[in-house]
Image (cartoon, rainbow, N blue to C red):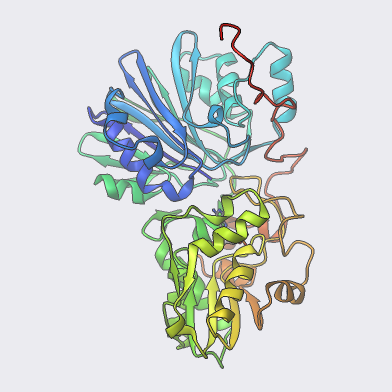
Length: 471
Ligand code: 5GP
Ligand code: MG
């Protein structure tokens, strides 16, 4: 997943983009970047880490002049955690600067990438995103936006895209509308963002979504829809409502907070825990759903876990051993609340099982009598190829285990997941307008080849230090 932000028509474009990145830090913590355009001159400042690492103070924004900016927070789903892959990517197309920020993940690309390489294309990154630039550079069309549309007709998968060009700011969204993408306005300034929480921070008014399949151009004439990619039944990512988006955002036409509470209520109906004394959340991701569960079940809501906000997300740590430690660093228990109690702990999802297994141990150490785990999504059994970094099925704890086996692995007294029917019934839109492939294995697009995250990584390691002959 990633977060993207676009600003058109403001002398403070870089600062507004920076704020937009801050609001969308939760969508990607591996890297951040901003590219601005000042007439024909392009400026870029990017780096690995959090927004506050990349822009520690105002001076990092000083050189980013221009009225147009795009920004990106990265969470890798194709290509490694590597500086060259941090967005927005920047290229020259016929001596014009073109920069691209992408949220989503493209699939079935290997053959196309090979074909382009045979024709002489030299790829600079191992991302899926770069292919769009190569296809666009080869496409015919009077304007860059027409060439972008031609390129997008040739790719498959999830994309919410911002492309900065001297002809204007281009935005596009895949025909399934996989990832959220909102358009707003702050007086005369156009603001486009993955999530509306970024518009709110900037003070922009939400106008509408970039529609699934829409390719649009913003220039001095205003906003115009230039192209419509072939229509499909929407396949919005249901996991955006379960976990990814912030509760104060509005995505796919509904408030995340509202649907997340509803999901918690549905879970309370499906999986009560009548003997429990209290219900606690795993902050912050399951706070909202837990309110729904507590409200519907009538079990008292307590704050039993305290989260240390200065530790990064546990999910991202590469090694299993380290991950355990990070969970402990991140959460501590409130013993006075927990001691002697029978506790329902609500979380949004179980991926590898690390978080819940460690938390269950911590709860017992705090004197909890019984641990009842309630999860506001079905078991994640299949990898995501459309923008979430859900690992291969070997690492997914529920992929090859029964519910009883997962419960034993977690070491808890009961475990219940929300059913897929219950999850989809909690949505405002009909169930067939969501992608829930990570739960069901029913991918909306036929996957023709391996779409693993590292499929374009080079086989050599370039970390060897070559001594400088002058020394
Ligand atoms: P696990 O520890 O089972 O591998 O992961 C479950 C925890 O990770 C849950 O608390 C959930 O909130 C969080 N989580 C679920 N999906 C994602 C994701 O795509 N990215 C990140 N960073 N965390 C996730
Ligand atoms: Mg969580």
